[in-house]
Image (cartoon, rainbow, N blue to C red; front, side, top):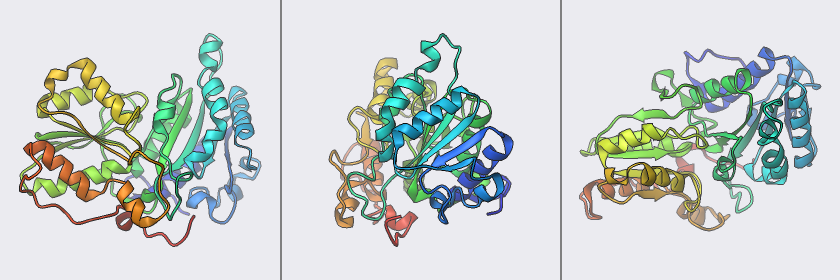
Length: 359
């Protein structure tokens, strides 16, 4: 796979491959760990050919032993290496929660700042081809709750390249990144990349500027929010969209400045609403200045149940362009019968990726 400059268009998959290549090439102590990392599919094409260039001693095929492998990664990080641990399903990392939460996140604090644990954990999230309840969870809020972890959800090729490079070169702590499987084949043009609003590539990114409603969104929901915003723009509704790129360290000032201008807030996340990212954004607004709101906050995410396997049920389980557009229009106009024509689209999976098999 050739590597293109970020000045040209890159697919999400190509950006991930570039990020992995650049990490290995730029840091001789970088190591890649993962199940299937060296097979012909190369973790959905994100590590293909890297073992031939950098050696299998640096791209390490691992057994079904997530906790042990994560412990190895932590030990490597403590001894000067930069491990990148890839999980082809975010669900699998649940087997390594003790290592990540009790060790990686706490080493620096417990030893008075003498030890750093720089490492990157890549988790693939999102709906797929009948993956069901145990293979399609979006677990960002579990990790974002833990001090010592940085949790990001890249929503474009540019954010992949920028944030992964920052993690490998400059960040001295553990980073958890959740990559949405439906975006892997999408091409992103550089002129459409979001603008970084904060001091680092981990910061929030502005997707569009508007005056009627603030939409705070994560991962692929930032793309859905943009599509909904484009639909509504021609129908008299202007959306201010913020891509919540870093869910563990939210820039409250960015959100509050936007909500103070629009007076209305919708949060669109890839996971469940209770105790999640949506709840955290609401907490920020409620504690900072709830008086800026002219209407109750609207939250969207997965239905409060395990994910069904059947596609017909899965389509109902997740929000889509129609339900998102309807929720935005209702919030702005203040009534359900708002006169806004809605797009007719049942499933984002039919738009972003056609599945031919389970992997």
